Structures are given as structure tokens and as C-alpha cells.
Amino acid sequence: FAFIIYNVVSGLYILQSNIFIALRDTKYSFFQETINGLLKIPLPLILLPIFAAFAIFGSWLISTTIALFISIFLFSKKILPSYVPFPSIKKQKIKKIFNFSIANYMVGLFGGTLTYILPLVILNFLTSADTAYFYIAFSIANILFVIPTAFSISLYAEGSHEEKEFLTNLKKSLKLAYILL
Image 1 (cartoon, rainbow, N blue to C red):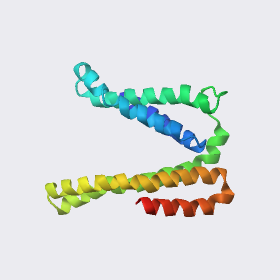
Image 2 (cartoon, rainbow, N blue to C red):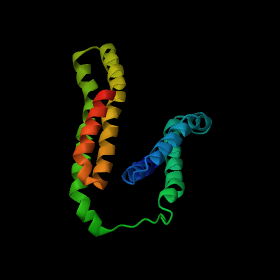
Image 3 (cartoon, one colour):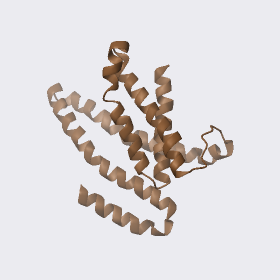
Image 4 (cartoon, helix red, strand yellow):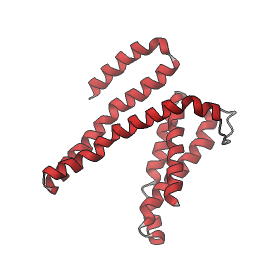
């Protein structure tokens, strides 16, 4: 049950972060992630005596839920003062974006697959110690992968607002990403 709840909360958490990006107010996405990250530090220690093995998972669930609620009820009000959170399902909108959403999901799924499968493939060819060394190096490299991802998200948000400036913004994004990498 907690796993199902976490998946719903996690999906809404990511959606809320993307809303901040789409509204060009990314500081709230940063605040949301900071709150979530900071709460994950003490929560396992607090939950350990009560829930034992569930403490780590529980800390993720609780910290993500708290960060989501703060984002919805505090940060969203700062950007859109008239916003009232009320769940609704609009079938016409779902039909309109369904194909795009499925394609986007598949790209994300296949894009992330390499991160999970490559260490397993390497394990079949190398020793477990060599695989561990690879995985550490690969994890460090993943830190660098954040740079082009951040630029592409910003480019996507800007491109949806300023279509005329897309090529100019694309060139700037590529240039800055390569410089930082």
C-alpha cells in the first residue's frame, strides 16, 4: 500500500516540479527538491526505532509528501495567487495529449535503461569487483549528465514560450552545456 501511495505522490511531485519549470519559476522547483532532500536526512533516524526496515522507504515517502504539499499549497500560490488545488479529469485534454505522453514515457524509459542495464551486462564479462569500480565511475559520470538534462529542460520551457527565439536559445544551450562539460 505504501509503495502505491509513494508512486502517486512521486508522480505528482515530478509534475509539480515541471509546472514550476513551465511557468519559468524554477526557484520553486529547487526549493521543492531542497526540502525533500533535507527531510530525508533526519527522518530515517527518527523512523528507525519505530519502523525498522521500513524507515528508509518511509523517510522517502514522508519527505516527498511534505515537499509536494508545501509546493502545492505554498509555492503554487505565490506564482498563481488564484490557484485552488482541486483534482479533476478532463477527457478531451487526456485524448489530446495521450500520444505525446506515451511517446515521452517511452523515451524516458529507454533513455534510463542504459543506466540500469549496463552494470549488469558488464557483470557478465568482468568480476564483481571490476563491476563495482565501473558502477562508481558511471555514477560519477551521471553527475555530469545533469548538465545537458538541465539545459534541455530549460530549452524546452523557453521554446514553449518563445518559439521565435528557439534556434538562438538552442545555440546558447549547446554552447553553455559544452563549456560546462
